[in-house]
Image (cartoon, rainbow, N blue to C red; front, side, top):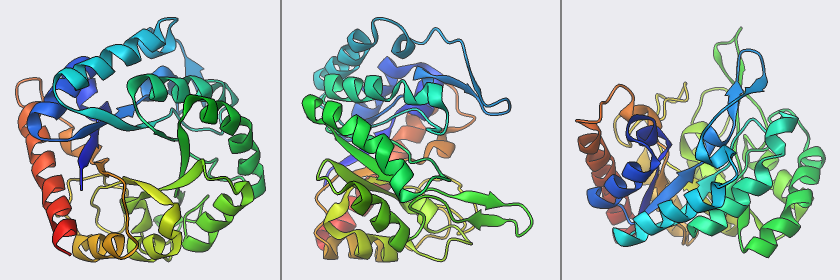
Length: 287
């Protein structure tokens, strides 16, 4: 079992180029290409703001190639990517093909594209069906992900697209194409109010499950913390992954763990993430 992690959190501190290098030096086998800075989304006003990030400019493919080469020079590959979101924003949707193209250029073979939280399976299927011919031409699979909303009155998560096994399968079946697969966010599946668990989701998804976002939480909030630091039962999660014959990477999305770190101590944090991920991978191999 190979291990990977998102680079978005450390890129905020040291930039993408250095992030890929340090992810390699910390012991990971691969890196997950975070492309959120392709679009500068203003969540308060629900609109895009100008950005000078390379992924938003005309030389975005050259930037993706540069990151790929840094990874290869340091002995790791890009295994998957994460497209910008929310996809409810029409302007962001216009960047999704660019995200798929960058995934291919970086060497990844899966691009996670969020469904619209509040659209039906059929409505989201239309978005994916429009993207799939281009994704296939790039040799990249699209992965949809289990999402959540928030119920302020109950102070807990509320159902959203793909948030429980029945919903997730319905969204996949609405497209019914081998190039649309599942990325299970372990933390999202364990949030109070969604009436499911990561183990339930894993067993229901079976062979559809080809990518992961691994992180820990208090079984209430979307904490995105380092595995085995909070309340998720990772022994049961790993056992379920073994039982379905999962063959993808163990990819971390524990991005909150690096919050507050500086260029001087971010590498220590990445090393800790790699050790935690390797522990899970070893657990999988021994299961």
